Length: 477
Ligand code: NAD
Image (cartoon, rainbow, N blue to C red; front, side, top):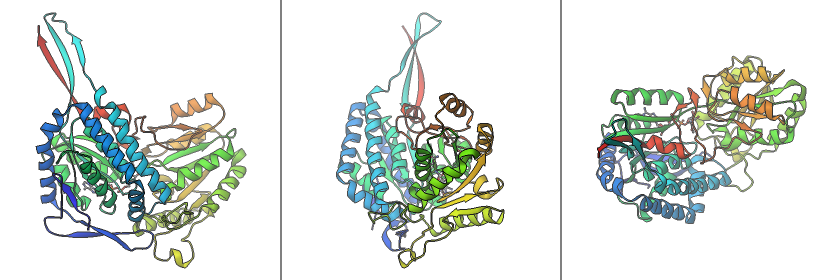
């Protein structure tokens, strides 16, 4: 039975309740995790508050050394962690391996920045005084993480928070707490002081909510659905807590008539079907120029039909099950809605046949054409393996369609014409635009959405600003 980690020690829920964590590939119980409540959150926040003064005073190079040691421990346990992640989340083992590797990478990236955080000397109009601007930790931070990238998205919050001198309480999604807990155990083994990093497990409505309202939590770093993010922002507003929100997306991918169609089809396959389509920056709408549409769609269908669907632990699996039965039902409902409005299914569109699929949440990778832009799959976020394809006459039409969304997370454009690519990047309403590149986020670049896809940035040097408060000091000389 997995345990929460509070003040450096494992613990069960105050009420003794547990949640079964089930493998999306076959429904089997992987382990149980404590089903915490507000009392557990209060203890974790108090532990983080007690640890704060010492951690905030710890020399930056020492904080960095601890993160580096933790990254080393994660690397030593990579195979065990990847297997656990696949069993609780469902993604193929090679994707889990990459996620664990990226967790180590993000720890190393921020460890490298720890001793580069500095302030400014500011000459003042009053000449017998000068100003200093220093950057201080915010305090206890809550890191609320979704189930699609439980480890990497925990990393993108805790790494900048810790190097900047904050202490953290992590709340994993209630269906994916196991790998996160194991990672935090490895932090403790690496020597992180008790209380600096805590994990409380349980439902969003109780554990998550208790974190939002706890007066000692000064900053909430949230990744999840836009609807939940709006609620987080409302609650945070009452106490003027700092928030960063990484929310839903419906990224457009544009394929122009001069694109490398083979490369674009390969990228579209990864962009949409990686993690069974459950990626915030998945390409969720595809716009292809009419003149090359038949050729491009033919290439894409060929690739998509070759994707091997199966248990993530099998070496040849390229797409695992959806994370939950509810998630699959949601995708099925969106495909049915599109079909009812006239869409044609050109690949997939059903659950796979066969005994090996009977107990898991499997759905075939799906492509749709002739989709009514008013369909749910075009208007909402489709968090699963189904891609609507729209044929457009030119770039203006592609960009108009792309921007006709409440979301603005990522976007990509495929063309050999640099001027066209730059124009598209300037006009696409999104926090990220990839030009002739797979929609893969980079630790070195700030990441975050515009419109209803979020508020604030994670990653890059920029993220540190979201984990510090600047303070002005005036010195009379
Ligand atoms: P979700 O909003 O249901 O849950 C996210 C987290 O919030 C979970 O830990 C959940 O327990 C918690 N939570 C739920 N209700 C809460 C409440 N009232 N108070 C506090 N916490 C609460 O999202 P999900 O289904 O786990 O994740 C999928 C969504 O996340 C998709 O919309 C996806 O696009 C988005 N996402 C965004 C990014 C990004 O960086 N922009 C990255 C990954 C996922």
